[in-house]
Length: 393
Image (tube, rainbow, N blue to C red):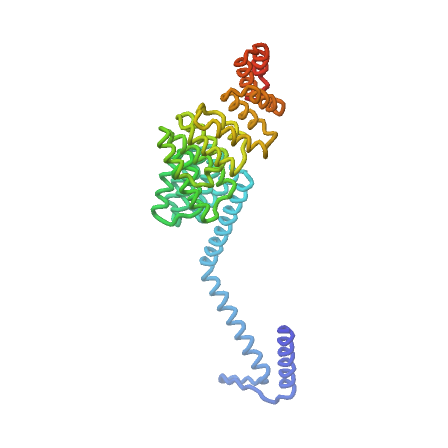
């Protein structure tokens, strides 16, 4: 629409000028003694316009000629910036494609052209790290440190991540603590710190960081659950100096974690090893009520403690109603019955366990029962069966 209006205005002006030139009787008189020049007014006006256009063009040409060096310098700067930005883009693309040598080459080009030199140096350092060239990596990190406009936080986070990749956990933790001391604690660096503490087996700090990351929704629930189990198990092993200290630490473990089969199994084995059979049996019962585990059911018959033997036997028989084909539970019942000299029930339970899943422990338990009741041939047969290398322990 705009061009149409412009065209109409130009046509109207042309028509008006044509009419004025045809019917106008004015003239212009130029006197320069002894000369007199008389021309029509229209021609005079046209000459003035042409002179103005010529002078204007001459002035612009002169101006452009004078400014030519600055124009050339500006063009070169634009070309330099364009090439630098293209080099940095190519470096990132090559890095994401896994072409680390090409990525370092383009990052070096961007660094030389002073396009975000700090970022370019860090990208080159990452590329050199991926190519397992620590000398070039350290040179690029040094350049990133002195590069104008470089981000200190980005550099420290990169150094920490690269140190973690090489399992230099102590160094990585020191860098991350320095980073956190001088600024906000971002989720990404907290995750890096979690890896460092895990590598250093600082399990109390691992649990603390896990709580922070879970609170912010910054870690997958499955990963957090597995790591929490591992950290709790390792803490249990560290605290197992005696039954009392282990029991004190166990009370501090959250109820949801105490019900996890792997945690309960580790704690039960530690209590049994330290002579805390009552604590072991109690935590096994609580854990099995929350979530059934055949491994825990097998541990329920490990302790040689006659004080609660009848209670354990009755509890296992109650569990058998809901888990009638659990081989581990049947084997536990067989061992408990053998401890009470209930030989018939012991052999029955152990035979049932072996019919569901033959295990070395069940064969040995049944062989010992046969020895106690004087059936040596059957005992020897069970011992030979237990020696089968293909059996589950």
